[in-house]
Amino acid sequence: MSSAPIVVHRPSLSGGRRVTVHRHGHDEFLGTAYSDHDLVVFLESAGVADPDALLDDPQWVQWRGGPAHEFGPT
Image (tube, rainbow, N blue to C red; front, side, top):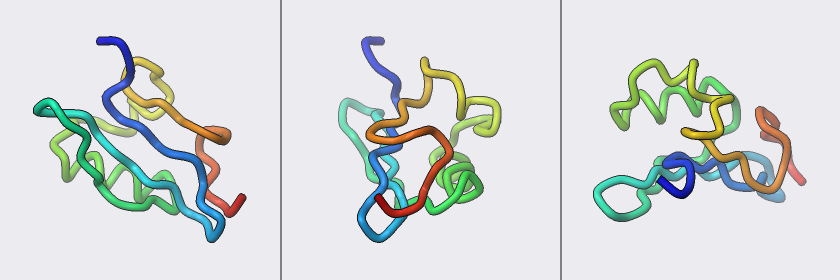
């Protein structure tokens, strides 16, 4: 795999970060996360087992455009 299958995009101007997962050959938008809890809920809904353990694993999650675990406005 050349990149992480889960991407947490840069924070938006109003806060929150888009979350996508790459599966079945394309990217799926899971929602906009405003906290780690939101992110975990999205990943559980997508069938990711034990998402809490994956949030800091760069093989699984790529945090783009800002520090990991920060969801406030830019």
